Length: 601
Image 1: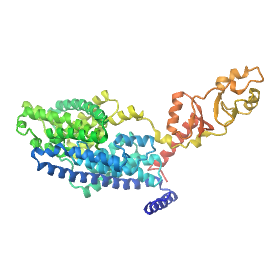
Image 2: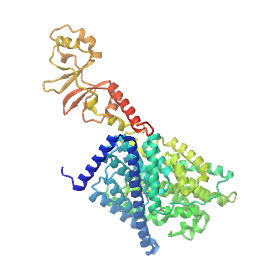
Image 3: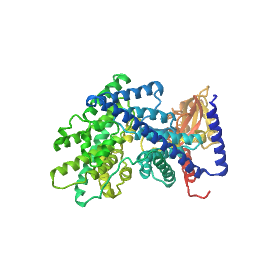
Image 4: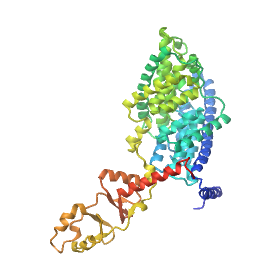
């Protein structure tokens, strides 16, 4: 295949760099260097996406401002979703991989390979969806973009699946860190959601990439996402933080349930363009009623964080009614329950985005609901901004099952480290309640039910094993017409416990398992008895092209220790579970040595 000139040049550069690093034996440090590159690229991608969406949202709001009752909100989301679907169908040819769950699948089952087209595909589609008012978040596209950049950086330098996994997590960390200005939360997000473990060899590259992403953000994207002014928290508010924690746990279950239903698709009996149109128009009606649901909703969130609750009256049809506290309280409750509905419709009708921002939005308005309701009683005064910030952490902790990410993210983006104790209380309670109803977070729940993929499955390491290295190709093969008396001579010269029986074309007919036929074999009286009379079908036959991870699952399911392997119908040999486990152990030891950043070189 003839590649374009720039690709051939890139390949030559990559080969020279690989030769240089192998010659100088800097494998461990090289992952650090790569994490800087990935952090830079991931940060740039995240900032570019936020910038483009910001411009499109401003354009959309300008259009709406010139129409009676902001009627543009009724059709702009449908336009954005239709353009998104058109791009995916006609330009991208449905090659885009949506959602954080797809990143996890590629880590677990695809040797951490993610196609580079996901970068520009997510940039285009999420900009169109959210920029025109789709009520989803940009964090999932940012994570996928960063992960794709990390995976392809590792592929460019011919790194191992484990190293590509680290760079995938580094890209995701950089993207989250850049957009939220939160380096610690960026690292914790990847560790809790994508990798599921915390080790020093993994932590250091993620930390460097995350810091690089924040530096990029500081240089190119001025301003903090949210700003919280607080004098701290008071002891008499603790019972209400506990109540907020309970509500956060229950609302997290609600978010996971609604998102799981709607994101799988609405109006399924219609074609993709009809789904986009109908879903977009329904979304437009919802946004006409609740204008704060337009786009990510962060501008309204910042308004209420500043104590300006009257910002909710802007652009709504119920401005005069919202002067009444009870109506305002009901309106806030409507925002709490409708944000995830709007997000689900956005994604389910074909738009691109995630539920990270909708979850933060829901948690924020839940905190506002609790504080506003209590303050109306006059019995005690609660800090509205504090409850808004803590509510965001509670919802994130419950939905993602990532309490550390939730605590540090909200603490960093609001500058509210003084709220650490309330953040811990609410996040912990929400997490516990959510785990009671949902043993797995919303990403893993879908993977378990649809992909039969579990968090403790380590496919990457297993699939790194070359099947050729563990196949016993010196196995004795028998013909089914062979006399058992001739088989005695073979037995006297081998200690094998399993034999393959082939036909005249070399294809497998069966096996002889000595543990099963030993008694029958030596009771055989007739000299004319053949192998065909004692052979049995194998428990199963392993295909040479089968992933090693699935082979281990077969061994466990059948409780077998040796299985035959065929390639294009031709018998190659036997693979044993003990050899596979031994090779797996050797790879773990090798990986530990290669990734120990503090080992002597």
